[in-house]
Image (cartoon, rainbow, N blue to C red; front, side, top):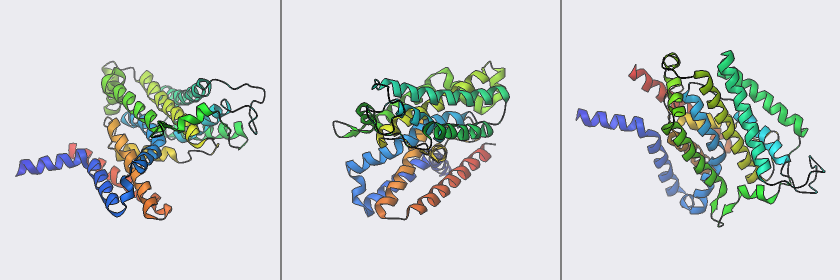
Length: 328
């Protein structure tokens, strides 16, 4: 009996959030049968794709015992610059009036480069100056948002080329492209975290940075890579955002960094460092997306969604602290 109790306890700690997600789905499918329709399921996945992609990068950061508060602003900055490179000829308020229509790879590469560069700067500051990640990325949050506003003079960038808008469309008119990109990045991130030296070093740095240095891990180099990858994923999210919305406003993605952090935390990534999975980040993002979608279907006031998300985040952190306390 004791063995069974221990097994159940361990299973709840390991799969608790998955069980919560399943119970949410069962409840919503009973009270609102439309929830389980194929169209709504794809809608939930699409809604979670943008902040879910950012949560993948945030997983690496939090596993390394860091934080990145800048990803929402980086998305906006990368998004407006990329979108300005992908406007149609004759677009209203075209940013480069004499520039011909460029191949779609140009705005995509621009967005990814800006995202990775912002992440690189974050990582460089944290690794080389030893300032807290909270401060470094808080500064980047303000700087990137400021550059987005300066670049656009506070106006949205719209009239995008069809090839860029197609990134927000559907394949065979069924599967949303943002979901395909999201799942590709889940696979890539999972391989990086679980099958490469970079991933092992990420866990080592979060587990014990001193021990990692002693064992030969180049901590500075790996921290720069970790934050650069997080920034790169924010750039990918920016491209997906541009394709899905059809325009990018300099105020876009405000608060997305908190949703990305929440997804990662709910998915079991420990802020104590050294613990976390890509699958957990995916489940965490799905929990938030299902919650939002369920509230919408049930006609619940959207403001209560924020309250519910906050309670879930606090609950996830309390559970994490209790698990770590038991280990100690």
